Image 1 (cartoon, rainbow, N blue to C red):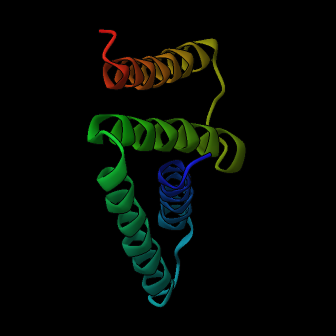
Image 2 (image 1 turned 180 degrees about the horizontal axis):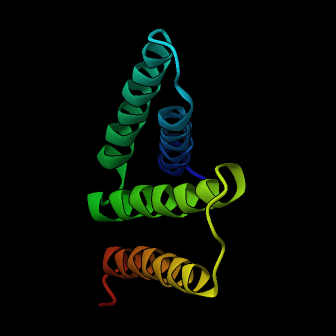
Length: 111
């Protein structure tokens, strides 16, 4: 995996950490760490956008955030689990994968 995708992985990881923090912060000082994670997250997001197409980076970032948040809600915060949620998560994942594949084809010049 090249450096650009390491940045994408890190930005997705830090995004899920600060989103989790939004749901669990109960003291004023918790917000210090949440802000630290947000700034770290956007640092890696900008690094990834310097090396990869911004559309692919942001689609991956937003897709992982959306899927991760939905799963976090289900497994950590007692939200309901339904076939409809799984269906739409799968559609979202398919869209992110499709966009990344389309960007790779454009880079090769075959589209």
